[in-house]
Length: 260
Image (cartoon, rainbow, N blue to C red; front, top):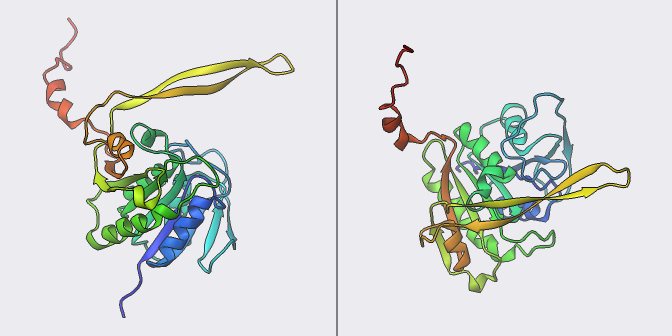
């Protein structure tokens, strides 16, 4: 009998988050699950890692029979510890999420959910980050479950190119309203940010970051278009940030010209 796939499950919302518990349930139907997740919310941590303080992991029991470890660090730390200290063999896949909120477009840069997936990709482990466009802690993840299972099984079946992971975002819709899955590119969009300046009772000024998401991309092949039109978006992303198309142009500059 063939060995069941080993699945590493992590997230950025913390080990008790409903989205993570849903993802664990789905993955238990596919393979053998090991959970390594932050002990507290780590949203918008990007690819931060812990280097100036100690890291702690604790084996915990929350639900199910799968081994679970609570980690004091970031999502990227969780994957590093899982691969190097906890697992007795390399996982066949790493899944991160289900995030409470969007990680489409520019949000992928800030996302702790996707940083965990990218860290797995750095280790040449196929990886997927899943996000639901609902920030509510009590969000309904049930409509997304069959789609998450399908995408995960397809990655296990086909693999992913080295250095590539999938960023999957799911619209906040009932299952019958979801039109399907679209492979997309990342939309060109960003946050127009503002800081709400306030003063605390001691007279010290402080700031709350606020902002408005602005989509400047009108293409119908983007993640933002897919989500706005009832589709699940799947964007292949990579951790090689080289702008390869610019290398030739930069090589025409006189960068090595000696000063006169």
